[in-house]
Length: 270
Image 1: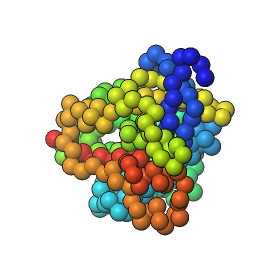
Image 2: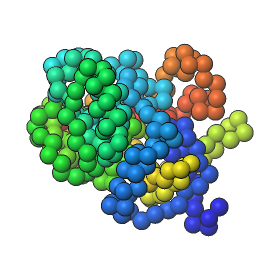
Image 3: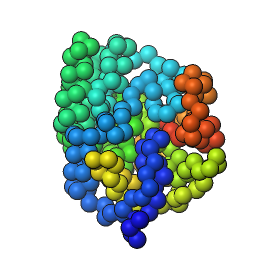
């Protein structure tokens, strides 16, 4: 292991790696690294998470955070391959908009929606930047396992608040920060990383490289408050029914029974 490397037991979801290299927070460099990752091998390496699932063992069908979206204007942050857009379109949302940093992901999403007889307005841009999305316009902004890629959490939440109508709803999910600190080891769980460490790091996975920071849960909560949101609901409990229905009995499933691996927050713009 490189003398400057540190152990990061969980990158996203269930994936584990042996080491990660600390890096300086250079926004442009991080954007280039992560957009290239998703333009090339991202889906092959990390797969894709989409509604009705918010992540591992948490589902909209059980949580019912959106309610009836008929006639609602919706913006997805980090649309990936478009399957969450399909989910909302088939539930009769009136307008679908989507933002993603990867041109290739957007092309996949466009094709997928076309195949489903649906359409959306797509914008390729980092979520932190001004990119022409209308303000005070949307009933819902949502993000499934994408918000954690931002290089500016407070700025991103501020932009999302500006996109929403007053009383509009923001729903997002990401890997639970405690999950990112704990690894399954010899039929037990062991802390491998300090929960309070929010430094940036780079990881090489197969033929791809990505750069991330593991933020504390309080960092997300405080950034939401600063942006003018009030939290209405938070989900961090793994759904035992989903674990059982999948027949999972691996280390990841056992871990999910003992600590949260995904968190979901529903917040409303004041």
